[in-house]
Image 1 (cartoon, rainbow, N blue to C red):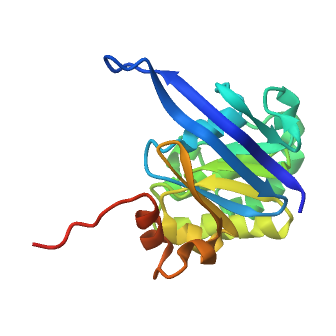
Image 2 (cartoon, helix red, strand yellow):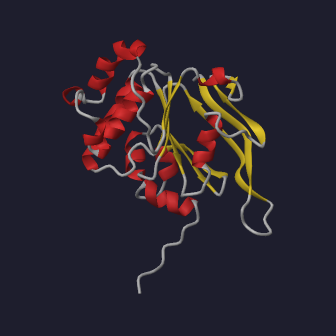
Length: 233
């Protein structure tokens, strides 16, 4: 399988705002590989380092040490991002430019928004806005989609629609790398997952292997990050 996304001993340190703490380690030697055509879930609690990883891949944050590659090209080179689409958790909706008009009809059909084409985006539901964001991320026909919490805040119908779109993209041979707190969604759509906690990789593998003896990915996730359920009083 061709490797599309790879990190090697990726480390990111920030200058800490806390007293008596010179630096904060956001990522501590992260090693990841994502293959062509995979739907890959990137999981972790808040502050685990998921968004930092994405920011390195997107060129927003330089690594302190180690390296990251997209399509075999170091992410420090802008050309590495030529074949990717990105959906942030909070999406800014750009106006489509004239040269992209030929793609609009196809993408509105993909995200099932043809009938709402002439409505202002501010009148859309949260789920519809998220699907517009997906269409925007796909406008350049990328080979890799990087999605930050694509189902965040959506109702069950909205999550189902996004899940269906991700599955259709996979059937077209696209690679999808996304972070999520919706572990049920991850379990149903992902080929493999990685779990990070406090900047360190704690587990990586196929969903069924990560789940193992547990009843669900959620239960496996909580054990892997060391979360202890308090007994009922």
